[in-house]
Amino acid sequence: MNNMEDIIIVENLWRKFNQLVAVNDISFTVGKGEIFGFLGPNGAGKSTTIQMLATLLRPTAGRALINGHDIIREQYAVRRSIGMVFQDPTLDGNLTALENLDFHARLYDVDKKVLAGRRGELLQMVELADRGRDRVKFFSGGMKRRLEIARGLLHHPAVLFLDEPTVGLDPQTRSHIWTYIRDLRQKEGVTIFLTTHYMDEAENCDRIAIIDHGQIVALDTPSGLKQMVGRDVINLTAKNIDQLTRDIEERFGIRGNRFDGELQLEIEQGDHFIPRLLSAVGDAVESVNLHKPTLDDVFLKLTGRAIRAANAGAADAMRAMMKRRGRR
Ligand code: ADP
Image (cartoon, rainbow, N blue to C red; front, side, top):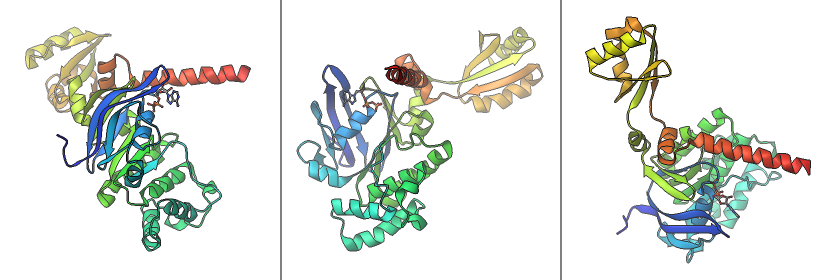
């Protein structure tokens, strides 16, 4: 039985491109009003999934419902239920911000009276109210992305799909976009489904599906995922590391590991332990480093490699390809 409140239901979804299995039998549900993230390295199958859910790409097998509508048999109803912001901007640079919104409203048959109020409200929400009559080609990358988010919401969708919403933006603009995404749920009650390969961003989601080679390898809240990895790690250095190791074992009953001349302790709530540790043996300690498990650690544990490394691999492959092309 599916939960009545599940606004996205995905069952055994597949997508092949010739021999390549881009999405490999994934199943999950997203609750109404959730911010749900798909996290994984480049090439993991995130965009392919989002495109199938948005009815832009036909699944090879499997089934999905958006807002109660089947993505294959009820494409029109699905499209009316969703807003989309994709990686490649689709704004018309020669039109003003308002004209871009109006054009979209016509596509979606948004009532003229509704549109009049709605477009001002949305531009205000993304802080572009005073730029409505400016042509979009003069906007910065962040402004364009904000306008696209506003446009995606124009027809009051139940679900907003965001494919890598902050890719290519500077860190400040990225955090700005996230403020809007979080506000959106509050103001619009909209469910948000997004993809990202930034681990720090995924932390903003209520739940995250970690995807690798087309499969979901874990699905939980950010803190639930990190609990899979285990405890915090504290690294200590000292002039006399043997003595410190013995002292800590005696006083706290914690046996550390020696690692690269450092003493490494694995412990729950390391941030609370450090003050106790320092008040007991602080004189002997030269430096302390606390490492809380990150989503990268989760990915590492599940796949044996880091997301960062996996992305670097993709970036290297891309650079190599550009080089080859350049030579031709
Ligand atoms: P992500 O969004 O996680 O970076 P994608 O969904 O874009 O990953 O890609 C998943 C896999 O499917 C990759 O190996 C990619 O090269 C392949 N792929 C995606 N789209 C196509 C396509 N139109 N034709 C062939 N292969 C594709």
